Picture 1 (cartoon, rainbow, N blue to C red):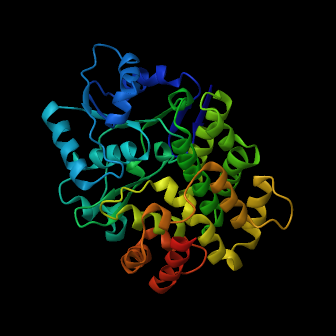
Picture 2: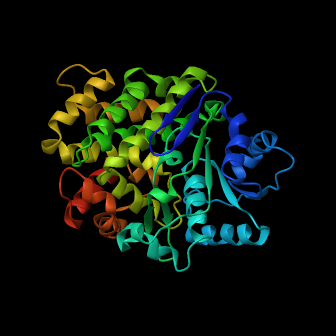
Length: 379
């Protein structure tokens, strides 16, 4: 069993869920709020979490996490936390549950409006110690279990980022067994989320060679060694699931050096009311367009990425990603996901203000984003 120490400590291996009780005890949590969603309740994952814990613990369940966490859901969960007298949080699920758990940990320990703690308002300087949080990922994509950030749709409709070292979970319980049997399309979408994290981190304008190395290793596992397509083809492939959860964790470790325009576009689309678009799918679909936009600035990075993907010299990474998306069964473009031309002005304005734009290797303004969205919608 490997123990990884980077932003936090990750207990990583098949069967790691058995260590959850010790993780709670070591952090003084005896009345945890479990932040999760109804899908995981129905799938029996929450019961597995219960079964790993002592009957002496007083568990409270919040299972109303939306597909894209909202400020409304955060405040509702915070109300449950206070009413039940909870003393810590266990976030069980994909990025949505983990991001909601981080925001709840902040909300129950800080006075004021949640939006005032977002990155665009200097929120990192306002965030102090939060309620203790343990993360238990059930997908291999977001890496939120080891990251400093959380993305929440605020009451004003904007999808914004909370970021602070205090939001990093105390311990991550990374058990690939919890991802066994994940449906192929969700495996593909979450897996591509991990891949995009690794690729955007490697391409980021920030300098962080260790993060680059971690990101390239994540790309090698997911694509170069074929574990993403193996996991999609066979949901019971334990080796593929282990390696994809590692690639997911590595993606979040790598993006300590920042992300880029792919995420700015995804955050904008994810805030569209009514569509409920999946973040990882958006990332996968937007990636080829952004790689072409950034091409002149990322030549050396693209060479390293291509090598990690196992591609021959001179291969076009953007074309390879497009072909991969097709093999995985993901949408061909944003238009196929319901994004239409009349939404582009709003999306471009949202993306241009997103904090991930500032670490994109090529400067991008709202006019650039209009062109990027036009291309991504049409494919």
